[in-house]
Image (cartoon, rainbow, N blue to C red; front, side):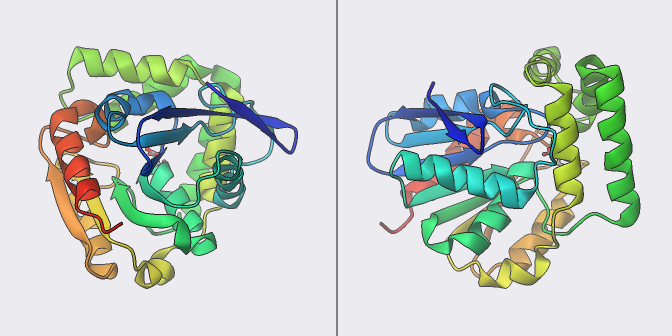
Amino acid sequence: MPTTDSSGAKIHYQDTGNGKDVVLLLHAFPLHSGMWSRQIAALSPKYRVIAPDYPGLGKSTPRPEPSTMEFLAEQVLEVLGNVRVDRAIVVGLSMGGYLCFELHRRRPGLFRGLALCDTRPGADSPEGAAGREAFAKNALEKGLHWVADEMTPKLLRPHPDAAAVKEVRHLIGQGTPAGVAAAQRGMARRPDSTPTLAAIACPTLVVVGAEDTLTPPPEAEKMVAGIKGARLARIDGAGHLPNLENPAEFDRVLMEFAAGLPK
Ligand code: MLT
């Protein structure tokens, strides 16, 4: 697993698979690139797959500053520069979707296609941002067990499989409290991406778990309406992480989208 330096921090990323066409996978909060294990297995016979970890989540070094979307976009572009990739199918889930909006503003030419999964373009309300600050402080004081207790039920469908619960808790446990706090503080500062939805001109797929309560299907429908030509895929039997709760359907939809993209 390669790492690279950026402003003193180590960025860990997976770079695997075969083929000239690249898929960039951007993970959700408070997980890491390991949440994509099934997609990496499905994609890698045909595609090169690049999947970074945000600071303090997975194997990337934590930093005290907020993981703003601007900072994360710079890190991702630095990784892509190092591996000489200038065009990719970009897939972002939830926080990864927030990052997609920022990446697209900075480097629209990167995008062969865009898959926005279980995400929303809007910024936080003042109450939402205050809630994230409280979460960040609690994470630093109480640790990752508390984070897993708080987040796991929100990420999965109402009656999740025990194996999914175990996997999500395990992924959360591989981060750091500092990484969780930085991500919350960075998301609290994210801009409203609604005004720039109309500038997205690449083929776009919007994916949503039918039982997602954090970014529910009506949010996805609004996003589809705001992006020219966007298509919606609803994944049954899944909450906020359809890639993990119904990977067969998620992968089918993603592979079909990728295969249909113009070169
Ligand atoms: C995520 O899954 O990345 C988070 O739920 C996003 C958020 O907290 O807004």
